[in-house]
Image (cartoon, rainbow, N blue to C red; front, side, top):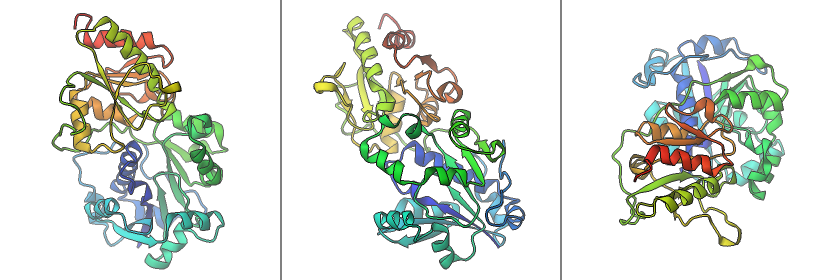
Amino acid sequence: MARILIDARALADEKSGGVGRAARYWITFNIEHSTSLPVILSEVSPRTESKDLARDVKPDPSTSLHSAQDDNSKLLEVVCVTTGLKPSPAVQEFCEANHFKYLHLRLPNKLWTALSLLRLISLSRAAEKRVGKIDLILLPNLGFVGSLHRPYRLLIHDLSFLIEPHWFTLRRRWWHKLMPIKKLIEGVDKLDCVSEQTRQDALRIFKLDENKTSVIPPMDFGLPDIEAVRPSWLPNSIQRFVLLLGGADPRKNIHTALRAIALYNVEHSTSPLVPIVLGGQVKCKRNQCPLSHVRAPNHVSDPELKYLYQNAATILYPSWYEGFGLPLHEAYHLGTPIIASTAGALPETAPPKTIFCHPAKPHEWLMALELILGKST
């Protein structure tokens, strides 16, 4: 029997947002198209290059994940693994829905990180002691995994933490320095990227064989089929609003969007726009922001997010850099007009009908707002 191990810790964080959704997509895509995996895996020996499991194949959302597995259930076993004091309900639910096995290694995450840095523990070896020989490991995000002694495939979401470290807090920068990122990426048997922009960044920064890299099929899907719910924290008086994401993240460049909205409101004082900011508190010098705004709680549920997408006049996404930009596709599927930055992978990955503006030019964003909302509103 061939066995795939999935580092499912990226799925355990309910606040992981687009990273968590992309991780689920990538995992299910790989398994969904794994009809020939048992044959492929039987040919893979430790530290040899694995073949591309699913090159340029577009998944059919209507196809059951288990279509490939049901016919090969005796040949292929999929095991999700997490660490920490308690098992993850989110991962348990994901495993049950997809008929994967769930293995929880009951060890505090901070202790796990320290032991993995000292090379005293390994995700693959710890799992093999409990489930048997692992043939392939899927890593849906960078993490502390120790020394992997089996072939592994890694998904890279973006490399902004290497391109512009100042966008991140001191704590996150230390986290990135501690993690053996270079060794982990250069040791892959296959590196999957969410966009061609991210793939080119990886090739430029690391010594990689181009044939060991690939771009996964576009993540052009929306939120789950759920009923929208108006957030209880959203004042009833607010009916006309625009949506901004990543308030606490300097990379998201919320200030350009706020300046553009402020300019728009000067021209349309009788029907102003209210900015609603998701993803933390916007950092302003001396507590002065270009425009007052409504800050959403740290965690917004999917039903609340669906309401915000459906009812927003538009979504503004003025990021300095993006590896993909999954929220734009979620908004697009709900009919929300989109204004996005020309930076990073967005010109490559943004959905149809997106209006693009330079991230440093608020007047371009004002013109885009006028185009979408009209000059006589």
